[in-house]
Image (tube, one colour):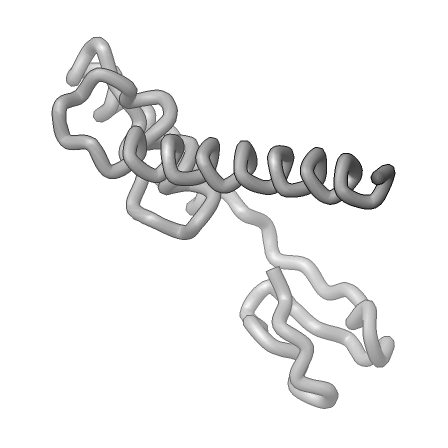
Amino acid sequence: MMNVVATGIVLLIAGGLVAAMVFMIRLSTDDSGKHPEIKQFVEALFGGTASPVQADPANGGQQESAAARAASSDEPFSEPCPACGDPVTHLHQECPSCGLRLI
């Protein structure tokens, strides 16, 4: 008798989780614009092209120029590779000796 009750509870929980996932997928794929925060969250999680909601379009230009200034102000560096210890510089995207992808 206990096994039947426990199985029923587990199936109810699993069914609830599946229903919640289907509901979130429907909300994230809805094009009505009712839930932009959820859509951005799902797109950011799964590698989509999430675009931030901007109240002021002029503010977006300021953010882009700030990002360009930050990228141009990166100073050159030379550090040991975390995997093999060989020196890598700011020009390397991968370690030349072990092939580790550098960020």
